[in-house]
Length: 143
Image (cartoon, rainbow, N blue to C red):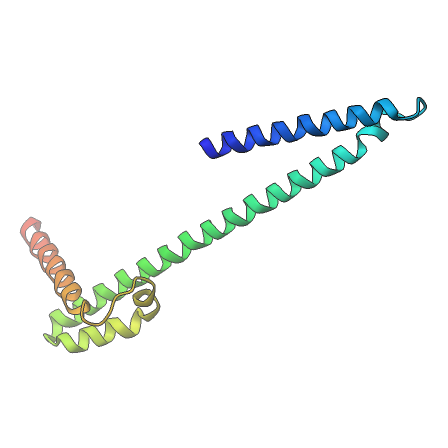
């Protein structure tokens, strides 16, 4: 928030300096010139600054939004592949097959999260434990 306060103070100082310069120019201007003619360069520069500021803000907003969407997509892809890999592990007991499936199904997500093949067996076992616990809970609450 302090950054915005500093930028606002700087913008106000710039406007004051520009107004002083325009005032000095207005005093030397001919009497028949209109007020709009005097302020036209100032208004043009302010309009350019506003448009550039909005363009910069919009660019940052779009990049931030796309980054969040990409991270959410990678997370969902990884969780789905991890659940499927845990299902393979529970059905076959073959951890290598489950890890191979996970590495192939969520390759982009693994790169994005910087996970290597050594961390995957632990994640598959943990997810398999969650699936087993959920299955036991469902069996316990069935009427």
